[in-house]
Length: 517
Ligand code: ADQ
Image (cartoon, rainbow, N blue to C red; front, top):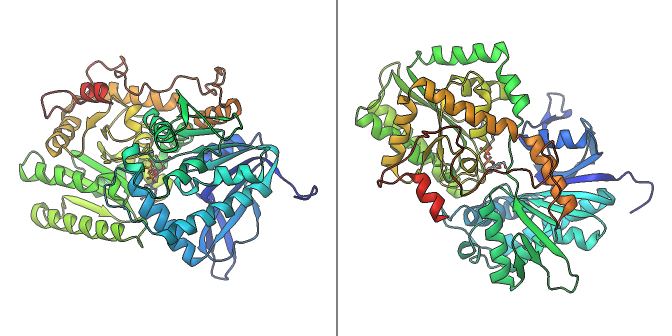
């Protein structure tokens, strides 16, 4: 590293850069900020620390030269077409993603995918090592970069290294299927601090270190046996949304007018139900459609009084499991509309598009019932975005207990999406609960997200990274890792006494989950 080169006190590494490339008609390249919560969180942190972001641009081929955009130094990492196939579509999305999401679809194991994963992780680490100032904080994101912490440590033992997992971390029984399980754990143990969405994820990681590497672990700390005496802390720091930014967007008169217009164009139904997801088998879209179809068949509800808008963002369309999911969803929607729709009043409005933030905020405001029914989801930001947009206290959230979000938003209309009867009941309860009760629930949900926004998440993460393996002292602004986190296995907040429940086997879901996990 030359002494004249500018380096950075904070370096974020994520699979993707926080910008999307757009090429105009003359062939000029422009980069536009992508609107994700991570970028917003980083902006607030990078305002006080000069920061760099290392990531892939999204196109196969040579990496474009580094550039600066909106106060961030962006350092692209190149991936060849074969690496996009083997590292990204293959190992990341067809090996790790299914294993980390309860093997909802079978995982594929290929040694050449693993070789690409190792190679690309090393390339990311080399870029990080070049961008980091002496003693910098390095914050690596997600399952695509689990080897990068150890590679960065080899190259730059002077920096502090954190990693955050946006998706679940699987129980050791599933993780153990991976032929490369030890290397993945060793890669992660290169970090000083590992952040997870739920305490259960952190515990799964610690248990895997104990059982598969034979390491000693106490509470949240794993002790390395390499003679260094180093310890790594693993705990939950759940991610959130930019509450204030999104709420003020939802309060704009144009957005509110657009919400009204959406309802009018759907024929002003009594109940508008909404699903918004990446088209992914983890999101429980099939289960949701099945429950909805049965409610229609049993004449509990029906168009035009009730309708469902399902927005499904195109995703990973070159991976077979995603192609067949899309076919299945589109066939199901066609069948429901064919059999149960009316002229001018389809039962399901299916939209396979990405939308700007304003349109999303308007959709959230237009929806009486938001259906968030994943079979497994690290967090699910859609649930938090929905309540953030409901400044009118309208609407009702049906939320799967298998999302990270449920551990913070217990008061929602809880469902187990595998239990179709229970899901139908949760949907009906979300429709039929009196308005005043729904407002009380919505107020409690909003308070939780307002107090735990994405800026606070980033502050807490960095405080935990600085203090690791110790727990940082509490920060009055909620910055430290010891600030109150949602109780993971505890009873729901007392602010809503009669929360909605799923009771298909005669016992409330809350009681079952609370005592079982
Ligand atoms: P995802 O699996 O992508 O994220 P989610 O948390 O719901 O899931 O985030 C999706 C984001 O995309 C939301 O911000 C949503 O508004 C947006 N979005 C969805 N459909 C859209 C559309 N049609 N147009 C525009 N925007 C759309 C992963 C993990 C999650 C975890 C997040 C963050 O799988 O569990 O919550 O990372 O850590």
